[in-house]
Length: 257
Image (cartoon, rainbow, N blue to C red; front, side, top):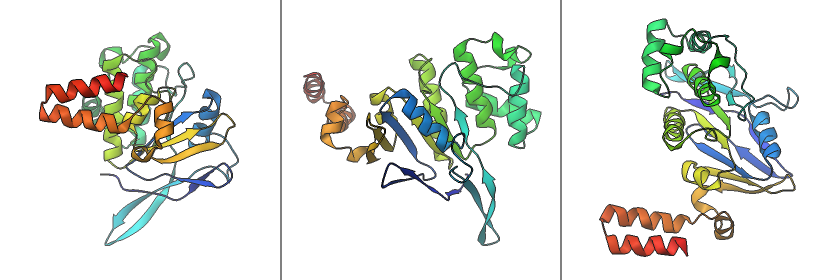
């Protein structure tokens, strides 16, 4: 398991400090799409001066203590249609990021099978630009996963995918969070992000943070405005576990009212 220490808090607005913690998933919702994208690019170190960019250190146990193994960047998934690839072919892209993670060819193939986003082996010699838009995003996700990123910064990661493939992306990011990475996801899909994230940053139209905190502590008025009621969802989950059809039916009707 990776153990990371994030050294810097990100100042959002006039007085709100956003501290990114290892092993947690963060959702960025609200505001305008361009506003969310600027924030995500800043977190990934792609905008702002070098003094403002966020640094992440890899801290590993070393003979009873800890040592900083240097500052690293983030895996960045841009909005759909803005992907940039370092390789011309599918194989070159995967091998580049695999080498960043210190992997040989056999380990690369084994991990690709574990990631299970897509079977890239038959496409190994194909140009990345011959792939569909969805396949290109799957390729970029798989390639960056091979490098074991410290933090994922994803802009609309589920937009091009059907339910099955969106679930694969969710599973990949959740697993990486369990392994010690931080995951930051910006999206228009409020409900999906609130179900997915541990923490949420809700942006107002005036380009100021309106709320930041744990999803379960989201104020009722904001939750209702977003069409998301955590209390009803928790009760529905309990009803399903208890296999009580009458209780579940009442909760479904209440959610729809």
